[in-house]
Length: 221
Ligand code: ITT
Image (cartoon, rainbow, N blue to C red; front, side, top):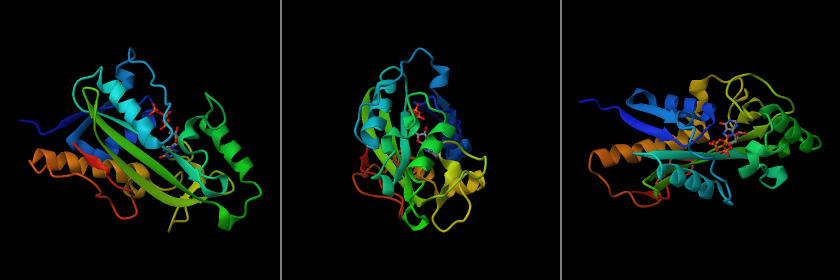
């Protein structure tokens, strides 16, 4: 019997799918909504990452079999009061490119000195089945925003984000390093640990656990 677990990620962002597959490794086969063009876009009307991740996961899981996860994520810049936050994908407008979003952010920060450019990526993974939320998992990585883009790895704001205790941006760091410390890596590993526990029959998982400095799992399943 194969131990491979099938998982649908309710996203049309192929970068997220690739990272999630990479983080989960060969024990999982990950597909995303590119395989299901008939499923409509979910309106992200929530006020938090958790609300939006929940909306995306529950909506898709009403129409798809098995376990469905959604990722809502973004960049919070302290000098901008937490912006772009949940609006990260559309900071420079509805269909903005990564470059347009980065250019707008760097313009907003133009007069902010280096020491005040602290920021973090946050990711909430929501897990659902048959329209019901089973749990949410959060990961955070702290860092700062540099003056100009560096590197071509990753996606989104990666070329302008330097994680704490590093000198290179996520755009310059190898994928394995990003996965080890990133908001998404932390959230996905929490989620995978809960699934593994469920498989071994240890379901007493309510509340609170979390990776050090990496967010936590409000509870699952
Ligand atoms: P789905 O809703 O279909 O999943 P999306 O890209 O619209 O795709 P979000 O609403 O969660 O997803 O917005 C996430 C945005 O936050 C993303 O487009 C990037 O701009 C930024 N972001 C999130 N994680 C990132 C990462 O690891 N590196 C760089 N930027 C990231």
